[in-house]
Length: 422
Ligand code: SF4
Image (cartoon, rainbow, N blue to C red; front, side, top):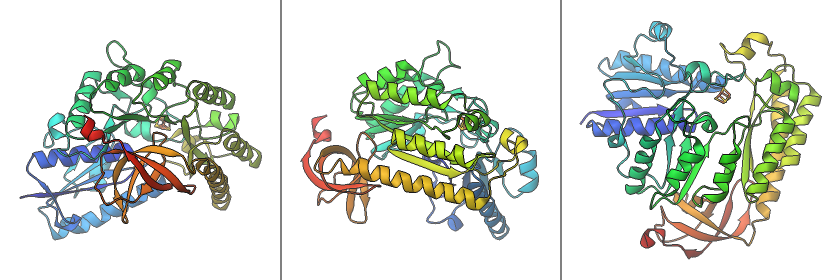
C-alpha cells in the first residue's frame, strides 16, 4: 500500500486542513507512513506568519531536496501560506517539489474535498474551516496576501460536514476562519456566524460549539446574543487586541480604538458574565515607545484575559508594516517586553484559576497524556484527572483540587454518560 506523510506547522486552520488531506489520502488508498523518510508522498503544510515558522519550513524544504535526490520517485507537495497564486518563484527556488497548491485548494490528484474525506473515527473535538483568506490587510500580517480574499464555505456544506462528523463520533466542533465575524458576507443571502451557530446548535449528538478567530471591529451584537442563548456554544471567545495604544493600533491598521475594544468586552461580559476572553498581543511593533507598551500592560491588567498569546514583532516581507516602517525596536527590548507580558499574565491566570479550587466543572474528555486523562471546560480550561476507565469522548464532572496558571487537576465527581444518554 502506498504511504503518505504530512508535515504541518502553524495555526489550527493548517492542522484542520492537514487532517482533511490525510483523510482524503486514506480514501485514495494511502496509509500513514511510519516516518517522513519512508513515505511515498509527502505534503508540507507551511506557515509564514512568523519568521521562525518560515525558517522551519525552509529548513524542511532543504531536507526534502536531499531526500528527493536519494529517492527520486517520492512525490513532494507544498501547500499553506508559503504558496500564493503565482508559484513561478517557488518553482524556480524549489524545482524538486512536484506540486504546489494554495491553502484550501484541492489539486486534481487530491480531488475536491467532500464529506467522504472526513475522518472515519474523528477525535472528540474537531476543527471545521468555515472560511479561507482575509480582507483586513492588518499592516503586519501576510495572510491577506498569501491566503487571498475571504471566501466563505456555503452554510449548507458546513452543516452537512458537522452533522456527518457528529454521526461519526465527534462531540465538539471548533469553527475556524481568519475572521469568523465576517463569515457569509460573500455568500448569497449573506448568512452570518450567528445564523450558522443557530443551525449547528440543533444538531443531535453535538455537545459543544466553539469558533475562532474574532475581529473586534466586526463582532456583532447579534453574535453576542447568540452566544448567550445557544446552549451548545461555549462561553469562550478569542478576541485579538494586539496593542493597548491607539497610535500603534492605527499603525497596525486594526480598525478600532482601545476605548472601542474595552466597550466591546464590557458588552460581551454584560450579556455572558461567565465568558472567558482570550487575546493576542504583539510587542515591539515599529515605533512602540515604552509608554505605549505600558498602555498594553494597563489594558491586560484591567481586562484580565483568560489567556494571552504574545509574540514579538518580526517584519514579514510584502506587508505594509515591512514597507513603511523600520524594525526599530531592538531585539533585547522586544524580548524584555514579551517576558513582562508573560509574567503579568501568569499572575492573572494564577488568580483566575485559583478561584476554581473546590469547584466542579464539566469537561469533554479528549484523551490521555502521561497517565492522566485530560479535557477542557466550556471556558477552555485544561483539566487533568485520573481514572481506570477509558472516558475519551465523554462529558464528565470534575471537582478541582489543584490549580496552576496553565491547567487544573481534580477528581471525577460524576459521569454524565453522554454517550449512553444519546
Ligand atoms: S484579521 Fe488581520 S491579523 Fe488576522 S488574518 Fe486578517 S489581516 Fe491577518
